[in-house]
Length: 138
Image (cartoon, rainbow, N blue to C red):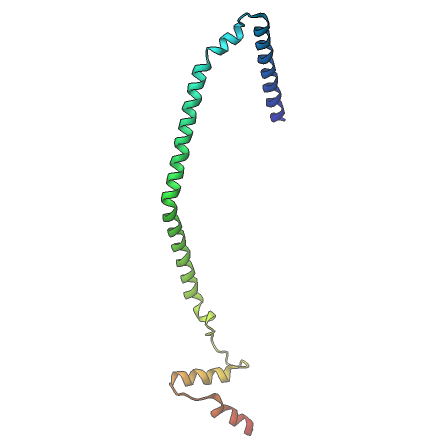
């Protein structure tokens, strides 16, 4: 609703100025309202040029800061991200690599315990050497 009101008021003001300019050209007589507005043309132009200059300066400053410091920001971000991944990996390393605590009466606990014992004794061999032969005999 506000956009409609602003547009309508701007349109009416523009039409009024066009009508006043039409009257001025038609009767070859200077209009006092347009004469008053003409006084501010140079000042308005200078103000608008100054604003444009300041905006261009601001945009260039932001662009400089982004382009120069973007590399540093990205490096810091990825270093933090990499550190979090490493922390997570070290916390979850045992479960990721398949190392779990053996249950005393789990389905594969006997075989896993045997593998663990063989590794701890650094004896190379296979589970079949003793465990499966004994179970086949029984």
